Image (cartoon, rainbow, N blue to C red; front, side, top):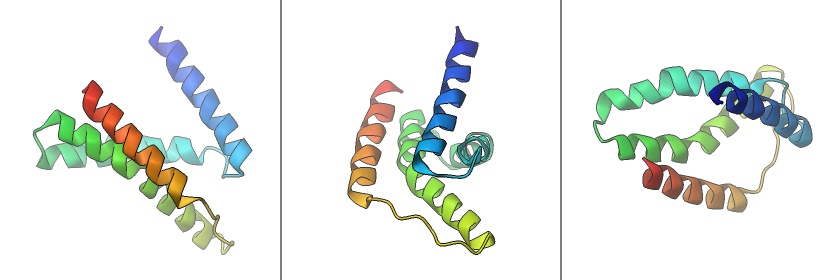
Length: 102
């Protein structure tokens, strides 16, 4: 069951990237480093699991945006524009959900 969820999530991320015009596999690479390197770094400083979940959920969107901007800067391309209002709303609700479920 867990493998099915992982494969569905990876397929969804591919569709998301294609729909938004992001680089292929950019979300996979970002999430790999985010989950295996950044979140354990946060866990070194915080003991509270709810705090770690909240911070991880809150910082995912801005760090992914910075990741895409840095890729654009590397390829000397014009960076993408996003609606920060909707991103802030998503950040707020996902942080509440992550803190509530942990």
